[in-house]
Image (cartoon, rainbow, N blue to C red; front, side):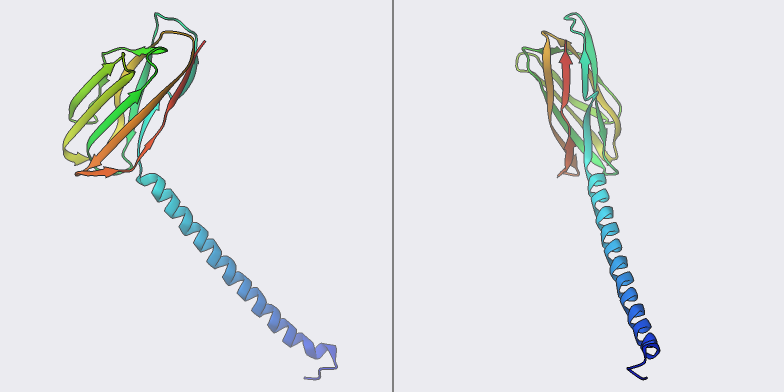
Length: 179
């Protein structure tokens, strides 16, 4: 190889170019695998949470002190088997009241508590399965009546239990406006 002749540098520079491109490809491949694995972990973490949601979770309604508005509480155990669930929904008793009649569904075998306390703004509901099982669907429904115009927030405290161990639960509040 003659270093003074430019044609003699082509094999060396081509080899160097191939080496650089190969290293770049390896780095891109490693980074894309890391991103994919992180996305899988994030997706699994989201799927592992038991979701208990108030539905609808928002809305604007015409104020009518004689009208009851239906609200549901749903569950998705994301494949986890559950033995117990406990839901407490808090509301401002000056703004809304809840009908004491709640409708339970068959997602859980035994409803152990179904109570409305309008004086303190609390709906309490508990249920139990004799054998752990997956849960998806409507836990219960209730009805709200607006007492005055304005914003109302339904907040919840929830506990799901799988074979005597608490389960990470995703909670959501509901926001309503009565105009």
